[in-house]
Length: 452
Image (cartoon, rainbow, N blue to C red):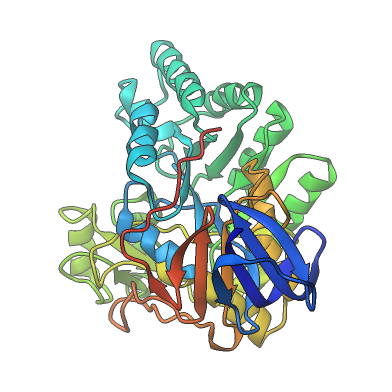
């Protein structure tokens, strides 16, 4: 007998870009079988009537900062995310066995993968100056830490070069070779210079050429705008055509958030043009929901530098340009914020993606859009049993009410950044029903830590 039988579903299979009316059976955490419409159906302990809803694999958030945060993971789950890849931008746990053991015992709302973060191991090795290169002794320690992280199950190596500008290209390549030899991918938040400087992009993509490792270029729509973004797409295509193993993720907002002390909010850029200061929105802290003036900007850059700011360059059309590149994966950049504060991307990205790029503009087909949220990130992260609808695959599943699918989170000062979406009707994680009729089932934490 099946554990669950989902009936009356519109099934979308990303592997072969097909869709059809049918049913799907779940048993022991796996997809047992898929049935075409009018096929005889077996018995099940519980039947879920999809009522014509779209049944797809659970979404895989390839760029998240949700580790250790139950509230953040619950927002992801409410959007249909069943697996989150964390440890991005150079920041991760440094105790991988402890991290994995904790959640293997207690469970988690979604499945988790964790990368080894370059920046945290730089600090652990004793290099606390973000503008300085590491010594040979520190480099030896970092290499040992990363090797140990891979042995404990870390899925990749992440760099946040904007946050550690003293990191040399030699350091990046030497550490990336360790990842390549271990069969791990590399994700990179590139250096910050200026919008029309494409050299940080080439530096990131060169890692794949030199080491042979798969490289995920993070935050595409955050990194460039306007004509520079179009040139970035051309460069990425150029590298791909030379068979470099290049992957790309992007959010759905041109407005990006990070801590107020970050290099991208530097005084040289903002104090020379006060109109740019007026584009800065306080995402957390005492000025939450307020656009900054000069006085507030200087305060946040100094005594409030750990609070978050949101900067919106105003080129909203860049999102559509970013997703015009084939195989750009959807990501949230989700991180935990205090209630009522932060960026809406952690609660809105996926419904917003489907609404804007499929339902309203039809820039992407439904098959293409589902592929970018499921199969593509599964391949990028080496998840061979996720992102697919087929017998034997993990039963990470989402049923969408297409007509009512809509995000409700908004920027602070305009709405609640943590407001949950509508239209994500049911979510299964490892064959366990975790969202039912858009409601979180209390106490269910079916996610596991995925060790590579």
